[in-house]
Image (cartoon, rainbow, N blue to C red; front, side, top):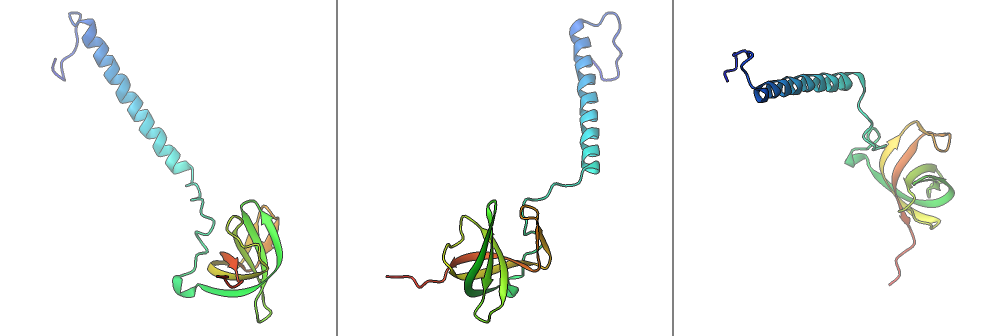
Length: 142
């Protein structure tokens, strides 16, 4: 059958069903495309899941220090530590609970910083809040 040919009474049922299915597939495709375009336009992107996305420091700005843990606040999979450095300055550091050292003397390596951070889970503001890894500062025994 030619593309522009119209079906008359002599067309068989198989050809009619094929054209009906073809029209249905085209209509469904157009509706699906329109719906996806509308959804993309109306709903903003979901967050990437990386809470540090906007706080990461350039490699040259990253730093580390040693200190004593003075306070620990658990918040889900995160642990907030108030650490006093050798000069007496106090720093709030957020790290993963699963990797944080339980020691009081720690080495902290900072890779991100937020000037004003609100923890929903703790219902508390930290200004500033450092993000990093926290390891025991105790010397390794051999």
